[in-house]
Picture 1 (tube, rainbow, N blue to C red):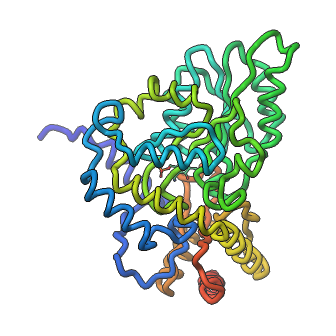
Picture 2: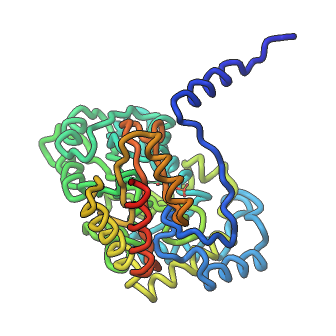
Length: 387
Ligand code: PMP
């Protein structure tokens, strides 16, 4: 018999198994009794009746799918409405929605980093930004995590256009990027005396900031006074705070027009499903009407952090809704997560290679709709699992 072309896959699988790093899928039951601190539904909107009705109404009106790419048949009034309201809410001139936050990030980085340009990328950036850098024609310099001086040094080497790319809230540890200092580094690069080179643009991934940070959840760029600036572009996902699916890029109108004409994940991808657009729009309107949801998500995160660290656990002080708790080993992280689950609590478990620093963690997500009693229960279960 011929040798399998996939022997190398089996070798990799054996190595993964030996290292205790095999991943498996576990379908989530619709009526789970688990207390969920694993998902990214930060505002508790994914199952809100107005959100699910928004999805259902959109599907009945526009169909189960967008039917084509946005430039052919996939743009509906709903997409335009969502883009308009998102841009307005977050304080940007214009917005463009994509089928995922991942696609939005690929679009922003590739379309804004042409041949001859420099991309300065934080070492802790999300995989979708990293992949954007890999696909872009420009050259990437990865700089130390949250280090504006390293960004300045990297920008000094540019010979053409440049972008600085960063998560606003890092997805694994939940820490915030130094946005004011990053914006200053970009602007200083454009000052006279910099050998006539153009300034650098700041491209921010606000996946974990939208709905949680800033006045009523208007996002990290808004909170830092950067929303609507001519040199700032933000990407968001519709799949976390807005309880839907999809992503968007927000920025100056001429930049968004450029994406319509140049971003491959916009041009060659089927448009965002109408149900997802309808759900996101309903969630955005709820958030506008109930701005206290954002502050509540942050307060729940802080409470989780303070209670767990008071019990001797090592965690990162949360800047948004993500609380990262350090585990001594990948095996231990898995065991903690399994014990939490057995006790009725779902938590995220991050291990290498998802986390390149080799540190395994439990990742807890605060939700605006958690009661104080549920926070007590979650803390109790985690403390018990650690024993
Ligand atoms: N950026 C960050 C920081 C994320 O955490 C995620 C989701 N894990 C994404 C982008 C991708 O967004 P989406 O899930 O909508 O593709």
